[in-house]
Length: 116
Ligand SMILES: [Zn+2]
Image 1 (cartoon, rainbow, N blue to C red):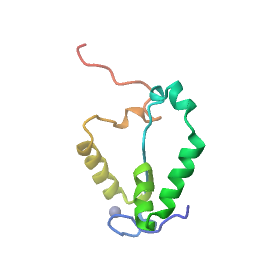
Image 2 (image 1 turned 30 degrees about the vertical axis):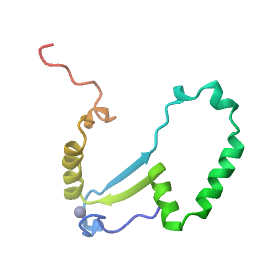
Image 3 (image 1 turned 45 degrees about the vertical axis):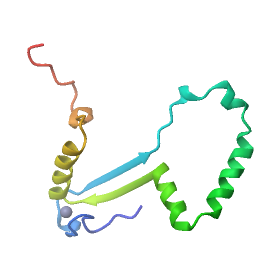
Image 4 (image 1 turned 180 degrees about the vertical axis):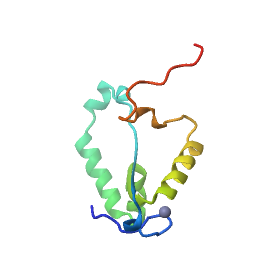
């Protein structure tokens, strides 16, 4: 993928920045493998898939794209330091569960639980 020379959020020139950030976001529909039963395995999967493909082919292109996006969407952005900082804050606000810098390869040891 080519390097964008501008921040994908504010449009500033990234070549003038000391640091730039890359953001990758994959939104994938998740399946629980435990929900597959022996009954499922005996189903006519090929026939069902062929039916599904026929249905998808009959749909308008916009609808097919919407369904594809629901199953898998991938985003890749270049950000300037200010926009990356803003995104970090927004991501913390967006998700209930905190996934912060703890998994960073730069932090050697897990943070200690205070007064545990
Ligand atoms: Zn920016």
